[in-house]
Structures are given as structure tokens and as C-alpha cells.
Image (cartoon, rainbow, N blue to C red; front, side, top):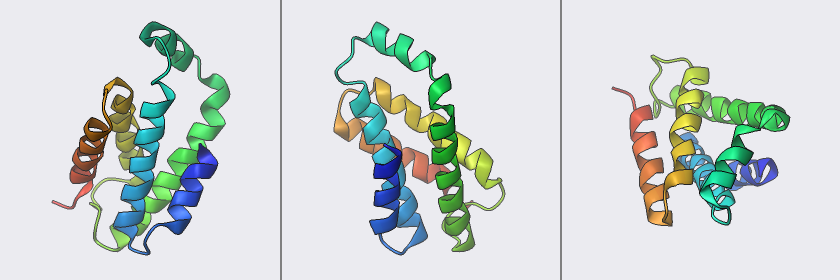
Length: 120
């Protein structure tokens, strides 16, 4: 999934906010899709045991931090909160995609997350 996110980041529009939105959308869809074929209880158990995924999650966090930094420089993302905290916000908010049952619900979640990033 990390390679997919990097590819999406690299081929997205030059506009920093659009690149960020594309990566967040892909992350949410991957989170949503990875749980579609599991029993909910089994998925909860599997995803609680993510220690082996920690380095990957750190790389996703770093990628989103970089995108947030670019978007903040362009004035598209709030600058009053450090990018690392905003990346935490994004990843936690989009983790809710696992509980949504439709692609449209996931898309709405991404829009709400992006709205929370806009400058005041």
C-alpha cells in the first residue's frame, strides 16, 4: 500500500492541496477496502496487532507530513498546528473509513478531514 500511496502522490496534480487530498483519499479507500473481506471481530483482532506495520505507518505519516508542509506553504492548509499533529489527525480520522460501508461514505469522510485542515 505504501508504494501505491507514493505513486498516487507522484502522479497527482502539482497543486499541494490536491496532492494531499489524493493521498488521503487513497489511504482511506485502502483502509476501507482492506477490511471489506474480513469478519468484523477478526479484522479488529488483526488490526490491533500492528507492531510489524509500525515502520510502514511511520513512512505513511512522514509522507503525509511532507504533503501537509507543502500545502501549508501554499496557504491551503492551516499553519497554526505542526504538520506532525495534523498528520496524526488525518490518519486517526481516516481510520474511521474501516467502519464505513460504502465508498461514498469514505469520500465524505475525506472531505470532512480536508475541511478540518483548511486555514481558519
